[in-house]
Length: 135
Image (tube, rainbow, N blue to C red; front, side, top):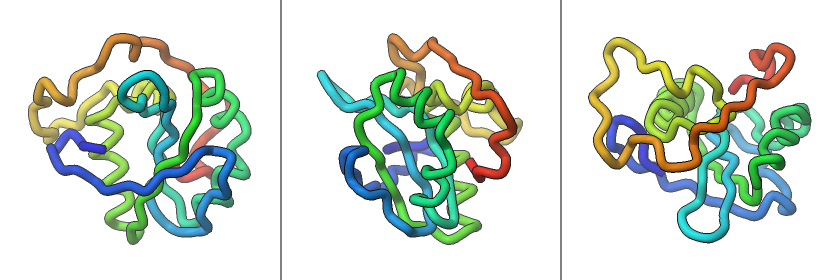
């Protein structure tokens, strides 16, 4: 996956039916099928498996958009926040809400490769406060 900065991150991935890793890092929920995978949500967590286990509304919304795979990238706490922000602003996944469409003042200009693709206009807002989930 490539962030707004242009940097690529080498995620590992597995079908959602597989066990999520009990590891610290950045995770990406994606819909695979018929072409390029579609990023649905980018989050970060101290324990990806525990965070996802406590994220029923997020997972339900992602399944509604065709969730098939979990991508993960191991990273320390400082790097996780930076990588997550880079990916959210570059990929603009629909389940990251308005934050995916509002660039910080110091963000680099988006290249054509980082602009929204057809079908990315559908937004879903999750009920409740997602802050405890660390995404």
